[in-house]
Length: 215
Image (cartoon, rainbow, N blue to C red):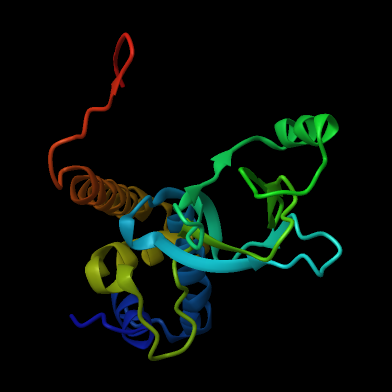
C-alpha cells in the first residue's frame, strides 16, 4: 500500500470499498470531511506556524490586523523589531474595551486579542509595527491529485481509516463505523501524545524563582 498522494489515497479507499466505481466522485468529499474532523481534534506540533504582519498606521484602523487564512488558535504574538523583543499579553475583547475607555491614546502595543478574523492591538499603534505570530494552523487540504501533507506522510493509516469512516454512513454500512472509529480515535490520540512528548520532553523544566515561592 502506497499512500503518498491524494490520488493514491482515493485509489486505496476505493479498493477497501470493493472497487465501487459508483462512489468515486464522492471519495474527495469523504476526505474533506475527515480533514475537517482532524482540524477539530489534532493538537500537533506540525500544525504550528509562524507568520509576520505589519500594523500600518496609514490605514483607518491600524489596531486591527487580518489573521492568516489558515488560522485556528494563537499561541504567541511578539514584536521582533523592538530593542528587546516584546511579547504581547493576551486579553479578552471586553478587557481591551475597558482599557480603551480609560485611555485611548496611541502608543506601542502591549496587549492583543482575537476578534473574528482579525488581531486587535492595544494601544493602537502609533508607528508601523512588525508582528510575529505563532499560531496553530489548519491541516493543508488534499485538493489536487499529487497533493500531500504532513499527516498523510506520517499517518497514512489514520487518513485511510478516517476517510472510510466518513464513507460508511453514506453507504449505509453503519456496522463498520465502530471498526473505523477505533482506528481513527487511536490515531488521533497517538499523534497528540507523540507531539506532547516531542514538545515537552526535550529537557528539564526551567523553574523560575519568585518572592514567596516558585512558579
